[in-house]
Every structure is written in C-alpha cells, then in structure tokens.
Amino acid sequence: MSYLSVTNVQRVACSCMLMVFASLSWAQDPLPSWNEGEVKQSILEFVRDVSTVGSERFVPAEERIAVFDNDGTLWCEYPIPNQAAFAFDEIQRMLPESPEWQDDPAVKALLAGDVSTLKADHHHGLLRIMALTHSGMTVEEFDTRVAEWLSTARHPRFDRPYTETVYQPMLELLAFLRDNGFQTWIVSGGGQDFMRVFAQDTYSIPPQQVVGSYGRLKYELKDGKPQLTKTLDTLFVDDREGKPVGIQQFIGRRPIACFGNSDGDQAMLEYTTIDNPNPSFGLIVHHTDAEREYAYDANPTSSGKLVTALEAASQNAWTIVDMQRDWKQVFTDSNHMSLSQTIIGKWLAEDIDAKGIVDNAQSTLELAADGSLSGSTSVNRYSGKATIEAARIQIGPLASTRRAGPPALMEQERRFLQALEKTASYAFTENGMLQLLDSNGQVLARFSRVVAD
View 1: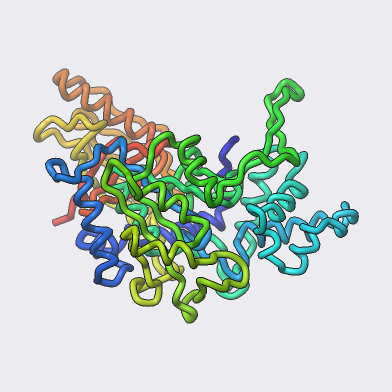
View 2: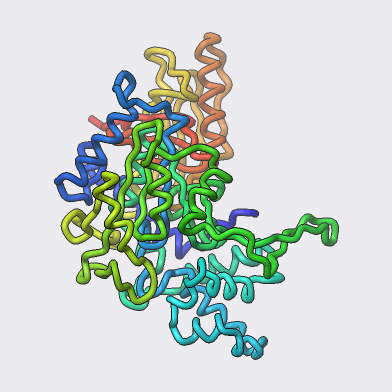
C-alpha cells in the first residue's frame, strides 16, 4: 500500500508528542518520564546488557527485535479503541446511503456501544464493520479517510486529538531502544492499514514495520494505472495466538523484547520470553491511574482485559508497569515546543554512512528557524532548504561551490551530500547527538551540536 502523510494539524500534534527529544534531561536520562525504581531499572539494565559488546548477554543488532502492542500499550484505548471510534464515525457517515446495514448485528452492536460483542470471536464484529465501511475503497482512499479523521476527531474525555493520547513514557522507550540498535515493530490486533497511516509520524515506526489484522485486496490495472481495492474478506486476525504467527510471517525473527497490556498480548509475551535462545524481556502496562488516564484490568468496559497475563507475569519474570506509580507523566504536554525547533542550530558530523570521518576535516550542518540550510562539506560550502515536519525532514535541492580537494576529502564530501539527500527523518541519541535517518529508519550520519562561544 502507499503511505500517506497526515495533515499539518496532525503533524503539529505529533511534534508535541515527540518533544521529549528536546529536553535537556535527555542527555542524562533516556527515560525522563519514568519514575526511578525497579521497573525503570529493569529496562535500562536489559538494554545495556544486550547492546554492550563483550557483555555475557550481548545480542547482535540484527537480532534485537522489539514488538509492541498498540491499543492500551502505546496509546489510550478507552472508552473504546480508537479504531472503533473511527469505524463508528464512518458508519454514521455512510449509513444514510446503506440503510440495510441497520439490520447487521455488528452495526447494531457498534451503534449501541457494545464493544465486547465487536471484539468477541477474535474481533469478528469490528472486522465486519471495517469490511462494510472499507469494501470497494482503494488503499489511497482509505488512507485519506483515516488521515482526515485523525486531523479532526478528538478524544471524548481528554478533548485532544487521538494522536495526542499516545503515552509519553512509551515514546521515550521506543526512542531509547532504537538508539541502542533495536528494530521496533508494532504487532497489534488493530487494522494493519489503519495503523500504517499514522505510525511513522506518531511513533517513528515505518509502515513496513506494522503488523496487524488485514483483509483481502484485489489488484487491477485501471485506466493504465495499478490499483489495489479493499474487499469484504478477512484474511488474518493479529490477536492472541495470532500474534506469534504474525511475527513469524512478517518479521521472520523471534523478538527479544515484548510490550503489551492485556491477555490478548499473552501469547506474544510467551513467544518472546519462554525458551528463547537469546536474553529476553517482557513488559505489561497495567492501567492503574483513573485520575490521569483510566484504571482497569479484570472487568474493562470495552477492551484491555488483563487477568491471565497478569497471573503469568511472576512465573515468567515479566515486568509490570504500574501506570500510577511508575510514570511521572502519562500523555504529552501539548504546550511544549515542537520537535522541529530542537534541530535548529549548527552541527558537526562525527560519522557518515558508518564509515567515520577524516580527522580534523569538518563537515557541518547549520539549520535556521526559517528552514534555510548551509554548511561545509570540508572542502566546499553548500546551501539549500530543509522542510521540517514533526520528526520528518527533507533536504534539498542543494547548491555548492566547486573547489577540488584531496581524494579522501572529496570522497567524504560525496558521502556527506549523499546522506543529506537521502535524509527522511531525524532523532536524537541518549547523549544528545543528532541522527539523520533514511526512509527505512537507518542511520545515515551522526552529528554533535556546536555550541557558540
């Protein structure tokens, strides 16, 4: 499917959600929204052990796979899962044109707010709603509908966009894992196409690293152009025992870290941590904070039931996050400055394309608040424009002088300019270094900030 960037409204929200990278405490503490204690320490120790060369528990980078449930683990799933809220709005919008839907049991359950019926039998009802509202729609049309909804819909309790109900501590955890060589994947019972619309901007997880429930697509060449159309047929439900199946089918490696919040994630937690040849880590987010979010486990009003997985946690040494106790902050503070403001300034290249740099040859990057860009390749001066939206950045076109230099420096210049041209997003490391990333999230170059005298 094609990936559609969300509207400017959502990008502003995403910038606010990712503001943690801007905080001065990031260089000292990769998880500033987590309270000190056993939970935070267990995360730090595991990541340190598996990513430190020479450690007895070291795991090669290609095997550092971390999988995350989405609803209730990365963002709020109450009072109903956000995709169910989207489906409800879609049914309301389309029902006048399809009055016969009113007799459909799934539609009746949705209109009555009966989420338990929709989620019964592996989300059969919700998948039926998705099929009804999306059948006959191209993937591009679906992407547009989701992006438009996300840009306007607001959470009924918190009165903020749904993409601002993402958990700040989990955003920090995702970034911390990636900074230490992990691949971060979403493995969720939610609709795969639905999550792929916002995963890049919201979590910095590219759409190809999102595994979810999906239906059959039909391909045809229409008016000379390739087209994929959604159908009524459900092919795969990525929930409970389906999650390990989805991991094998789409990832092809056993994870070493798993993060969930309900019994629906238990099989994925078991698959990650039981009899794994590599060191492994399992974590459950327990919703205990009725004041800042919601408190539920055994008897949720909609989704997120947590009973058997909680009982299995001690036996399998899974870490339990008590949201009320362990998180300083639940959601992001929309009053903080956007992520795009934090990259403004002058930066010195410390590594390009994982091949280092020539000693004392300074390749620099300087960004101004208006998006103008300039610097030195170490031989020539260059200038251009950068478009910055949330965690994304597009650089170019660039213009430069044309002086010649020693072969080693000219090769560094070539790699440097190529890295800038390939840049699709950026992030900050634990020690505050700037990383430029390609469209697949791979590091192209690393920079240290140049502090003015």
